[in-house]
Length: 154
Image 1 (cartoon, rainbow, N blue to C red):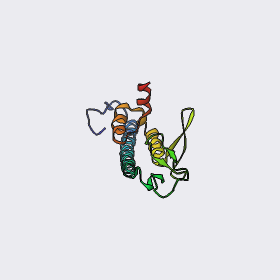
Image 2 (image 1 turned 45 degrees about the vertical axis):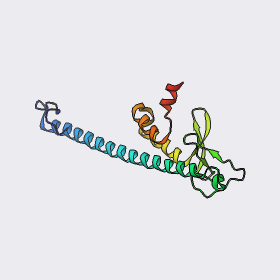
Image 3 (image 1 turned 90 degrees about the vertical axis):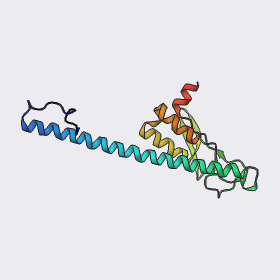
Image 4 (image 1 turned 30 degrees about the vertical axis):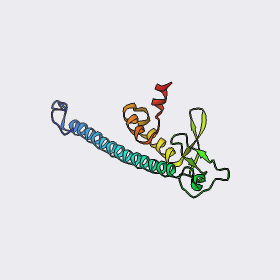
């Protein structure tokens, strides 16, 4: 509230009351600044995760049909005895038990790689999973579908 036109008229209050109100406005401004910083940090983290997922997808695409096709597409170390592994519900990459795990989506258990699990946690924590416009922009980058997008498709 640095802009004086946005500041309410406090002239009718005592100096003590005015000081209390101004402290409240200052705390609000500080909290809003913290929220902006957290949002920027979450956006940067989401971009980094999306970049990692896209890199892994590109590597996996190059390995299709080769002998290395039967390895974890996340860590690229673990070989699958059955050659299949678990496919991530979100990015469709195959991962081993160290690089993924069961996650609960509504009332069913799904397999998600650790990158997508972290991505979903950030989206849930920031509330971005529920913001269709921003979520659609992000999903087009990594090929993920947001829950809002899934609901519209039904």
